[in-house]
Image 1 (cartoon, rainbow, N blue to C red):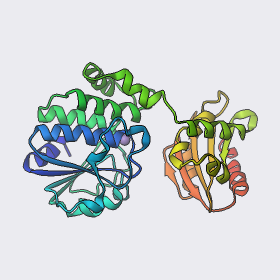
Image 2 (cartoon, rainbow, N blue to C red; image 1 turned 60 degrees about the vertical axis):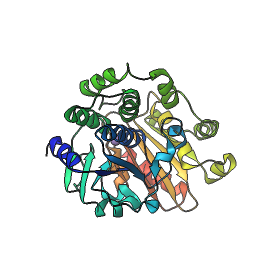
Image 3 (cartoon, rainbow, N blue to C red; image 1 turned 45 degrees about the vertical axis):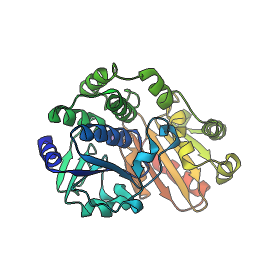
Length: 315
Ligand SMILES: [Mn+2]
């Protein structure tokens, strides 16, 4: 389906609800806020709905009071657009509102998207931000300072600051267009060159528990439930810990274990063609070949042993 169908649906709608996914990231938020700026320029009534709080990193980049909790929304929109939501569960409590809208659309770049809306636009783009850039061109709306900043946030975060393999000519071209319209340095500092004290302390603790196997080919880092308590940390403070293990030169498979009250949360990263998505799937999780995650019951030591066995079979 072409993007023109989405543009047509927008044209027909007066009120539009944009849905960001649960545990919102830079792409879903940046794309929603850029769309809001664009659609308001087209004279639409627009609101953003999200089942979840704005992560602290994004609080100074986006106006938090412009995101509505689905429980507070009474209005039925003419058009609801799910943004960066690979399946209907990603809409969380917003799904009911979404379903009730007069028309529904789904803009996404996860190839596993199952097409849960009436209009589904799913491509292999680097980010939904890239798709929104195209939609803006299609609708004849020029980016301004705010929408340029929002689109940069969307694209840069989903491409790992333009370093992941999804970084392509298209998204760099759009970014080049946006960069003259807003203060890149300040935004990039917030996104990529800043970390909370608690997150820093957790990295130190997790790395103090580094375990390596097969000469470093497999690297484990771990946080205990008691560590989280000690630092007063939340799961969002653990975001980049697994990358410190992945970045070890010799390491092909990196795993971050976080002990929970009941069970263990596991993040996997890999290099050189090892499919950690398949490993996560063995524990009921999912993801890609190079990055995946799962949550499993069982004691930390036993879970580690089991994961080590599975990885050894792949290396
Ligand atoms: Mn995305």
